[in-house]
Image 1: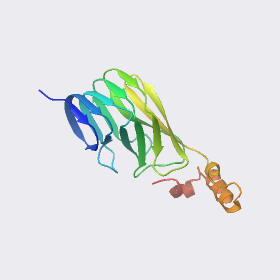
Image 2: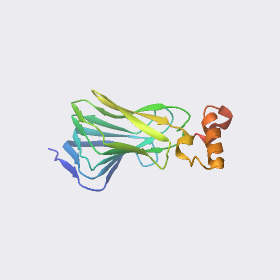
Image 3: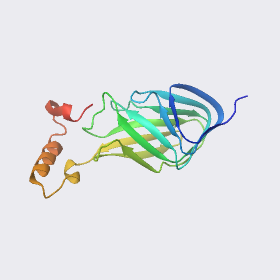
Image 4: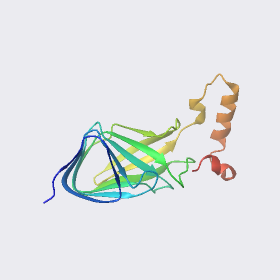
Length: 173
């Protein structure tokens, strides 16, 4: 029989399947796929993510992201950190299924962050058997020094040209 896994610290990363009755992350990090690439980590069992744990998710083109796929129940907690990979675009909002489960889902994530970006934010939708993150770009004007004319001008140009395909390289990875 398989034993329970306790992730007190450290990182569980990669693709494949973890077979365990319970995977409990106290202050550890779970990163489906290899860091910097999209992948799925399967857990055949139940998962408990305490308030000190982190889920690290790479996001690419709209809808393409890492997934933590759980065959069992999940208790959510902790933080989610997002990192862009090839294909990611900050032109508009994009939704990503970052977690699936076949059993009961309880709890919520505490917070999220998107790398070093001051304008990207994530909102979570908790469905019965999945968690969807919608990443939305904010205004550049909201993060610059409003008394600095150069910063205000550049922020205004970036905000006005977000949908301009000729400048898509400024908003894509």
